Image 1 (cartoon, rainbow, N blue to C red):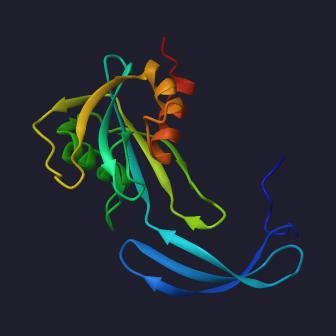
Image 2 (cartoon, rainbow, N blue to C red):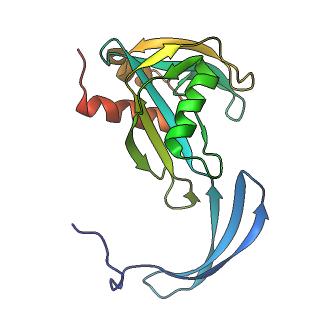
Length: 188
């Protein structure tokens, strides 16, 4: 199956959008659209910022640096990759490296590489997500981001699938990025 072209009649037509709510983190809009069936209407869309997640590795890529913390929105405690919104004008890989150090106390010593990019909720939310992999990190101190601080731990990648199954790893970025890494880098 190939991607739809601009001439494909199955594409939705977009006539414009208007903002209902806007702040530095969330923008809610109503988009004037017409799906292929010709029934034109306004569809709500949430537009969020670009987000990066950090997959820092050690021991020849067999362990991942993750955080255990409370997430008040869902009132859950679990493990997850460090991450944050990309600051305006900052390259995603720079945000990822900085965030790794601020949230974990470990500084990446290699330039890193983008593992993947995706949209977690393509039907209603526009929020590009990326996972950046750093193969080498060095301990430089304690986490400096008190708001995001949690328990910093090294987890064997071989344990990740079972941790996801038990609900111990939270968040779409972690649940997408960790298994995706394991596809190309299986561990035993």
